[in-house]
Image 1 (cartoon, helix red, strand yellow):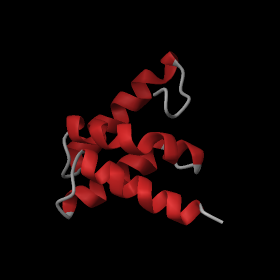
Image 2 (cartoon, helix red, strand yellow):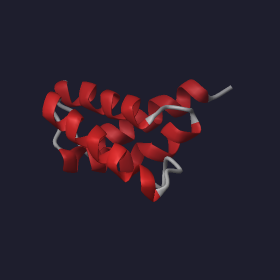
Image 3 (tube, helix red, strand yellow):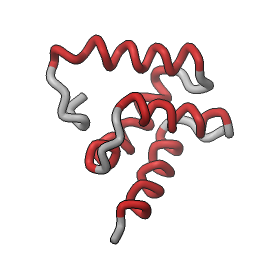
Image 4 (spheres, rainbow, N blue to C red):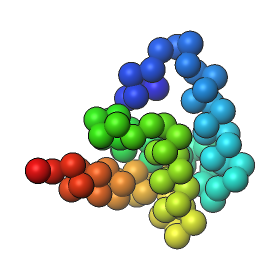
Length: 84
């Protein structure tokens, strides 16, 4: 939540997003959390919402990239896309 600049009042929203991603996707909540730890700050900096971030994480999880590895890959891609 800190990486996305969210207040404590938004905790429920973040929990719902993680739970929904886990329910309908291939990555579980701990794996999504690991990925967000690597990718969250870059996501916020490039105006990617937490919902879009979890969707991207779940997309990579379907292809076998989960947890911190998925977060690192997403971070690298977003940095390359946002470079001038």
